[in-house]
Amino acid sequence: MPSNAEGATQHFAWFLRYRYKGESACLLAGYPKVEIRASGGSWERVEVRQETFFPGGDTDVALGTDAGGNAEVNLEFPVADSPCSPVSSGFELRLILADGSQLPVAIPKGDVRRCLPSAVARWNIGYAAEPPDRFPDLRASIEAPASVAPGSVLEYVVTLTNTGDITVPWGSCPGYEQGLRTEVRHKPAPNYDTAGAWRLACDRYPSLAAGESVRFAMRLKCLPA
Image 1 (cartoon, rainbow, N blue to C red):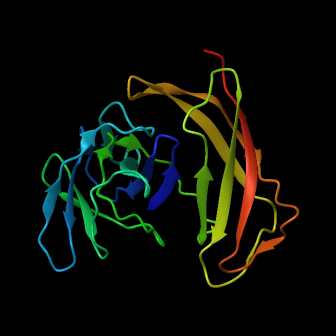
Image 2 (cartoon, helix red, strand yellow):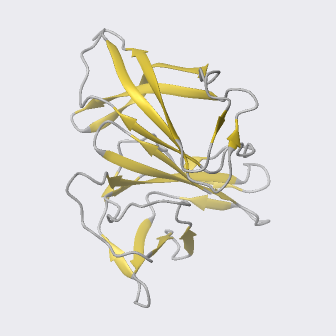
Image 3 (cartoon, one colour):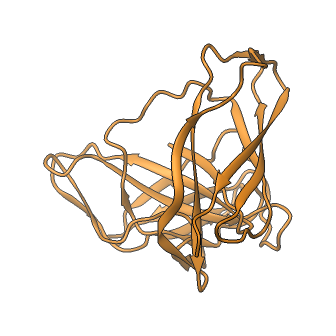
């Protein structure tokens, strides 16, 4: 199950979650390799950096009856307006594990990224149970400054767009999480600054029609240096 996340480092991530259905123990070690196939072509290896700017694992993940059956890994992409290695539409991606087995990568619905992935994370333990997706056709984009000073307030804008064919009624305003990840010497620090969960102030917008977008002004207090 893929999901999108966009960071202020001019990178974009797909978080890929897999459920293990085998009966024997399974160990996901190190970083998976990435391969791509254009429409009608052959599979080719993609040279990617090991470690992304997004949260990933830091140890091997054991799956099985006693260890649980979910694992997560993320692929990092450059955003559309930054330098990237372009790829044609209709491409496929897959992951190659340490033992040579293959995992397909489902392309997120409505995704328009046309760049090769630039980095891959280590495997991480996935959620024990996948919550239902209340709004599968909503897509979020973020407008944020490239940097922010420690101790200040980060102000940014989130735009939600209904990419589906029918109106989306909120019912109740959805919750959201936000957090600022610190970058140290081009590698992510292990903690988040001021991470937390809130409820979206959507009372003025009882529903979102097909193709319609709504913008939300967001604020996040940054920790001092």
